[in-house]
Length: 470
Image (tube, rainbow, N blue to C red; front, side):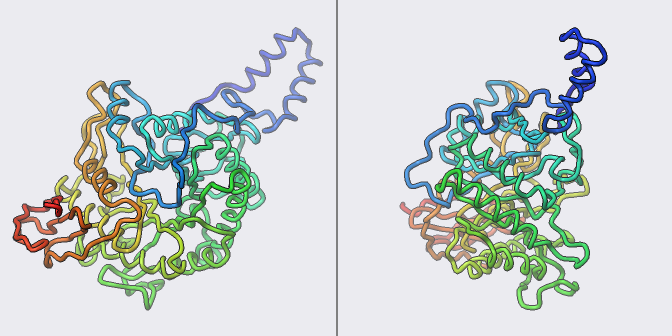
């Protein structure tokens, strides 16, 4: 994800040569250079005007609210780069208004402030341009933090892109600096009205007490919240983006009261959420993420019933917030990965069916917005769970099975949807409105079910849309 920089020592020598000065003058230049922000760290490709409005912002729709609907997250590779025809193919296919998340550092974005007061938004600009071109609703996740905010080195070519470094939180003495960076991002992209503060409590763990550092996260959240609202009171802010981990009910930290056939919630997560909820400066929506499977990758009692966890978590969260804040799932997972984060064991039919069951469960739990973590590949054709083929070639950008499911779900079940109560028996999952119904076969064989008074046959793992208006 990082971009190699240039030799800062060579640059200082070139400055001296251009000035045509001797050793004494060179020493003076070096001294002056080292008094600049970053103490002489490389700054090639950066600018001081990070808060300058980029490109042509789109006008947010009148009455823009905190509920954005169902969309996806851009990850390390996406459709903003590649063959022009392939990029356009994705841009033109995405439904207008579909929300798209982009992080400010990592997952396709470079270090936004490699040296204090010096900014590099080139990659971030490209992602925002793609969201605009595709007619999407931009959402920004304010994660992660430049190295110098975490005790590391400053400079374009010194960014540590290892997972351990990326997932380190800013040091408390730099919380204000991170809030200032958040404000800079908000000024640069004034059409972004939805911001999520941080990602999965990364780096916020209290080793001494073996629990989440919810005090530290909430302090950072509150500073960022105030900074963003100062830029524009219409900006909407949400958190805490906690991973709603579930455990084997026999584990030490399993909640004694919040459990189901899918396992038991980790009580440390519940404590962290409760602290944030009580001490937050404010929030326009509440954000969680998590998987249907346990922290040990167990699907209890099976892959479809495990999705009931999403419903249970949603109902719990809404009780905690007094049912006042719209609920977002920033990430959700129904298919365990191997040690390399690969998901090749399931067929596309099974993957789509379990994913559809997960979406249904989130909606039944009260969620109005959710984001699919799109595992896009840079090239090739083997991309399990991707929304489209890689855009590196002229034939790329073609939709894959999960794309149709997500796009149709977003269209049929937008925020404010009123759901109808339809049953289909023990082997199917159903979500319906007066106009349509989504029906999912949970078996690896055909099954006959009754939906809306009609007897239908579903093939193995079939996902079917029914028109109730006819």
